[in-house]
Image 1 (cartoon, rainbow, N blue to C red):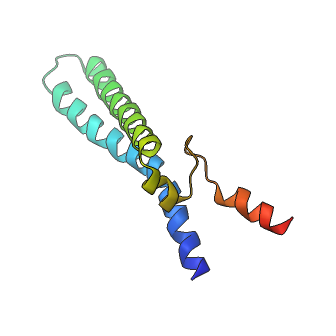
Image 2: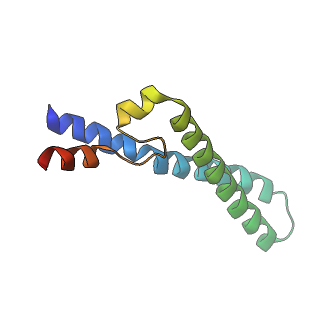
Length: 96
């Protein structure tokens, strides 16, 4: 059961980068759709890159805001208010 809890927490900690990664692909897809209407390829490339970056940053900020406001989610993922994993701190305290 302890291994299952550890795997669940690791996957929970990876949610933030996965949310940002998925949002960047979605934003780049939208940017590519906009870029297909443009005449200059270099401008289209920059639109795609900027849309991907903007959606990744926006999704990460929204996810971190959700973590700060949801004590139940923080408890389930064993995170502090800053989004830092707390289980390693607790495990070290138990050893000492």
